[in-house]
Image 1 (spheres, rainbow, N blue to C red):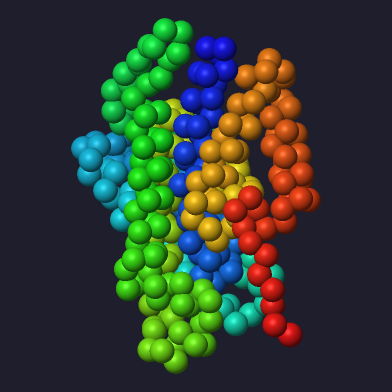
Image 2 (cartoon, rainbow, N blue to C red):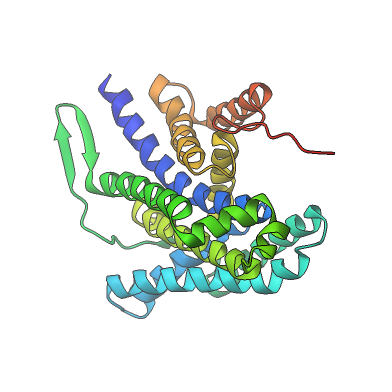
Length: 293
């Protein structure tokens, strides 16, 4: 039983990182219906900013973290302005292919600069392990889970209670009507990307603390799992992203909990995705919305 609980904690910690990334997916998709497959690579870039600041330039840890958050936000905003904004009225497949191209571009640039060899990540905070009987939990897991939950709560309050959040919901519901009501759609979309990539920067800090090493391709798997989390929970729904993230993290460690080969992890994960979408195509918390014709 203690092994199951320990693995469950590990899964929730992983799921917290997926949830932070899924929240970024949800923000962008909820406004402009774009699956930003470069989102995971924004996290990869932010991780390497932290690595460069601490290891290569010897900056204080706190300054490296702040710079990574700023760079993540700027990268997201610039990408939206250059790559996505000109395609806003194009077919969705065009924007999707562009997002994949941006992802590959960021991966290749990072590989050119840092090479493909894994880089060892230095501890951001001193690891402290707590024992409750046979149950083991560390301070990084507690911080990661707490940051994820707090981020979701703050994001939900922002979207539902602030004027900018209400503008985001208006643009999401009907961009033309929002424009007629005096809402600046372009500004609202830019703010959405900024918030989404800020969440990516926070996820990068959590991943850097958890993983221990970095590669230019780390955003691929991280982004894919987070996208699955967003879809399972109900893409475009903030609590759904959190629920999906936790669920995917637990499913990923399920083989370790029941004593089967870890190689079956992806089979279980994507099999679960298929089953959920068969019975609930809009995700666990998603709702079917009829379209007028």
